[in-house]
Amino acid sequence: MSTRGTFSLRKKAGKAVAFVLAAVIMIGATLGLSKGKGSTVNAAYTTPRLMVTGCDIKGGSVKAGSEFDMVIHLRNESDSTKLTNIKLKLSSDNNQIVPVSGSDSIYIDELGKEEETDVSVKMKAKEDLEQKNYTVNVAYAYENSWGESFDDSASLTVPVVQESKIGISELKLTKSEVEITGKTSLSFKVNNLGLDKLRNVTVEFSGDTIKEISYFVGTIESGESGSVDMTITPDKVGNDDIHIKVIYEDILGKSYTLDDKTSFVVNEETTEEEASASAATPDAATAGLPIAPIAGVAGIIVLIIIVVTVIKKNRQKKYE
Image (cartoon, rainbow, N blue to C red; front, side, top):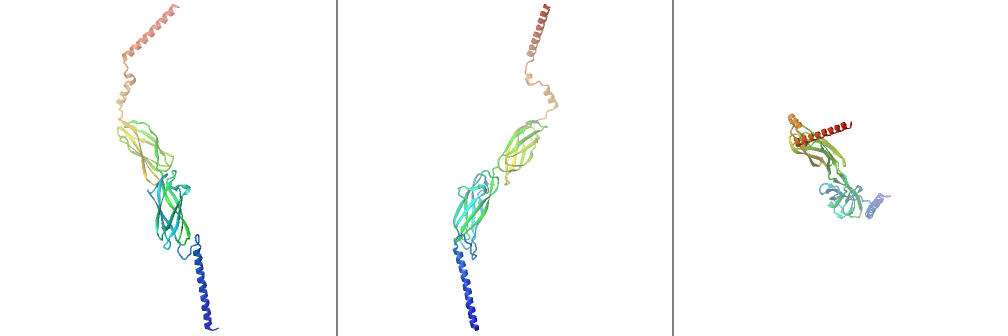
């Protein structure tokens, strides 16, 4: 066989191989495009990607039991295809946070290349939720320009707060009236009536007639109480209220106060002379009674007793 013949055969073989490779590539591409929904994406292009980039809560936080607006931010990350038939499904553990409308699904017709959009949905938090951050899950599905389907999920954080409820009970002042040199004891309970844990509970006492003082209670769990028992020292003579201010924080560090008061009287110190004069002064119950009539009544009673005694003796002698 000549050199020219050998070269011709090699050339024909190379063309055949190239033809077969081209056919294989075309068949693979055709199969990839014809699979439709649920197919494996061809590696010839970048997989389209829908992203949940975050959310905004109007007002910043949500009160347990209230409705609120949640704005979900979406973005089509693809620069080559628009996304269509977008469906979002919202859920939370034990239905802690649910859509007000009752429907947990949101539909969007399409989202262009590298386009962003916002979806607003009205939600409601259950009344008995503890004050903390909760999660709303977003499961979403979508299609590209070739009808291929994709799905993904994301989690959004919703801060839920409880309205703090606090009260004071069993308020007791050992002595509501003391001398300037005396002291008294003030005690009561601080009750956590809400579902939130109260932190850094502190009680401050003030008033025109006492020395200002504070008492640290600490943390009070939901449904529990903290006890306060303080010695109150007078500072000035007068008649004024003892002002009680309870200061506490919620889980977010926001500070609240509760005010109450009780009456208190501070007198001058009693001297020894005043104490002796008070002891010598007749009681109010007897001080106003007239002495002469009392003495006359007593004399009559004594006379009657004497007469009765004499009559009895004369009768006894008569029968002896």
